[in-house]
Image (cartoon, rainbow, N blue to C red; front, side, top):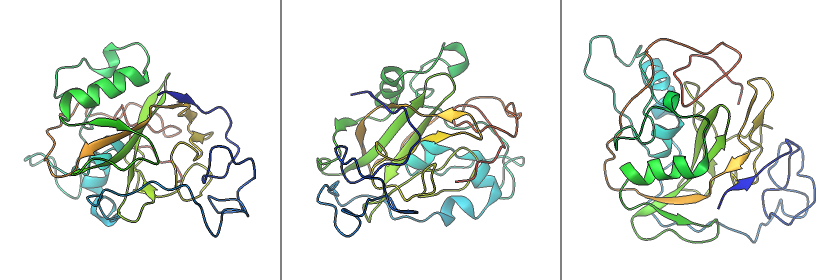
Length: 242
């Protein structure tokens, strides 16, 4: 189910019905900071939070986007121009491996298109909810959309918290207000400096954790966006402070 997020104002991530403001630097309000009864149960195959795997080497960091990170996918092409020190190539793009057109050929971005692309190249994907445990052998990701600009992905880690990798920048557990991500639906996803606002929440999806995914890179090898913006659907070397 597609859900819209309009305001950047931070909200308590424990419960969609909670109207209390979160504490400074915290994802929860005063009422829920010590205990949140609403939980996203783990299936047991969630990946550990190991940001260094993507952050340590520039070549890996700049050639893997949120989609690759969400699927726990790391793969460098065999090429003299692509090493751990530098690899300025296109990102893996949802749907390219299953024959969907390039994003540049599509007018705008919508949740139904994005989720269809995921299901087309990642067999075994199912939709879920925050409070539902994924089927055996699968784990949660959460795609979101800025319909005029970009898509983005979050993934649930082994300890229950969520993380993401914005474009060519580093893996982080922080949302747009610098708070840890307990629920990507309730986390802030509006970034004024880049102009990106992922208002459309495409739902929670359970993806197979044991199968090696076959992804296809797309986009230009050249940098196309200015330093003021960051995109996962287009190759970019810009930075966003998360």
